[in-house]
Amino acid sequence: MVGIPARNSRNRRRPFADFHVYNRERNRDPIFFDDEDRRYFLWLIRRYLSTVPHADSRGRPYGSHRGRVQLLAYSLMLNHFHLVIRQLQAGGIEKLMHAVMTSYVRYFNKRHGETGALFDGRYRAAIKLDRRSKLNAIAYVHDNHSLECCCEFCSHRFYVGTSDTPSWIEARDGISLFGGEGEYL
Image (cartoon, rainbow, N blue to C red):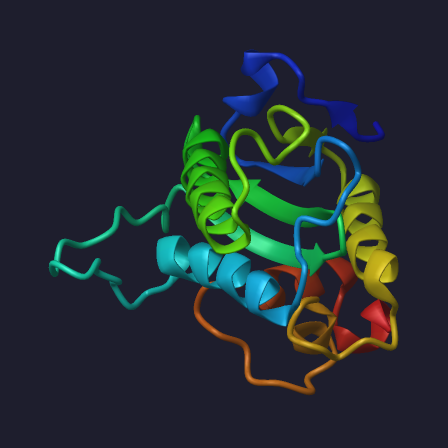
């Protein structure tokens, strides 16, 4: 079975499933003007998925989504992003994406003097049920950025061992789907 679009809430709420999650800017303009924007988007993901708790300026902890979802792969492009997320708990992706996208829109609008919506509606999530569709999703996400890329805005570098893997990305789970680093390459 190939990836099934997860447009209905039943698929999005399915626990123990992998999803290709993506979204773009509503007019196909950039959502990342520079590396600072990309770093902030990744920091938001890290903030919600890290084993190290993060707190706001008043010391209040941000809600953790660790245990609800696992990030297997990511790629940040100029006007869109791709994520491969394993949902461990029903509704986990919805909660994570709401937190990340809402925070990013607030940051983006304040930094760039914009107002209103940034993304083209709600994120999209295509469910990946079989091994082949999961492998294709990870490969697509990395190939979208370039398979030679080892920059911080693509998780490919964690799959080829060129960088220490942080706690907020489960690259080892992704590599194991391929049967190891050699098969991934």
